[in-house]
Image (cartoon, rainbow, N blue to C red; front, side, top):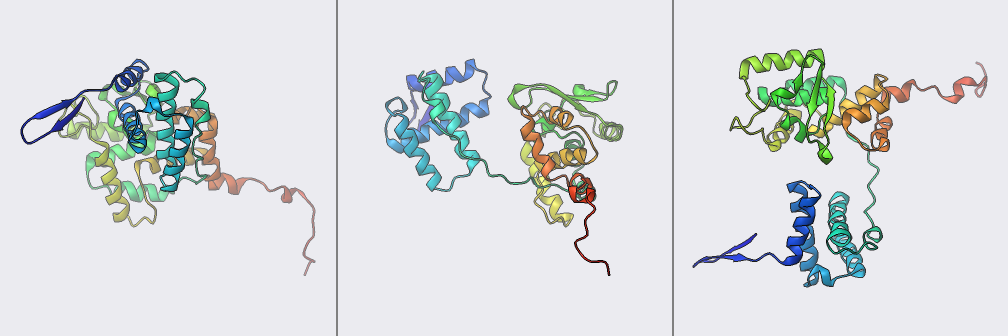
Length: 297
């Protein structure tokens, strides 16, 4: 519901039938509240740019809008989020089946993820000043969980009998299991004895709510500066490091894919480009040749 406040009274701006239909379409498909807000914001901006209702705009207008956004230098991830919103608008809400496939995604830059060495992981975690944040970030590295998954872990999700942690409603609404190492179990037991969390393993100020992801992001910023690490470290950096270190240890990439919750193996395969010990241990075909290039001295 749109609300506009004036000096005299609060005016409730009615929701248009198109907006209501799109909200209903997203609700039926169980899109998360965050995704719904993102899609609505993107469609509002699109409509505002042309000064017309989206149902009066067509494919050429979408193209012109994409050119406009690209010219502003907007990040590829933001561009693709807008593309997803417009594809949903036309393909689902407006029922124009032929349009979505003709709205192209922005090409993702082929950048390598930032990865910490094992020594840097130790330095980083030891530099986290808050006990709760240190244990939460240790859990992130030990399991490869996303930041939203770490904050959402409940005490009941720790299965010490099977040595796994159950992740509920991860990305895409999927559940999965990650490993619970013996060392992490010992750390979590010591933490539980000190703090006695009830529902969420890492509660916020209100014990019935989870710690906010912004708290962990702030802890990361402070810790990598305090540890003197020359890399920008986020919770996702720990996830990248988890995957890369597993790959360097010889773990099958399909197991890593399952642990990370990736739909496509190609997403996981990018870690092969940063697993330096794997690269260094790979025999060059040159080593199989009896070749004399430089004359013996």
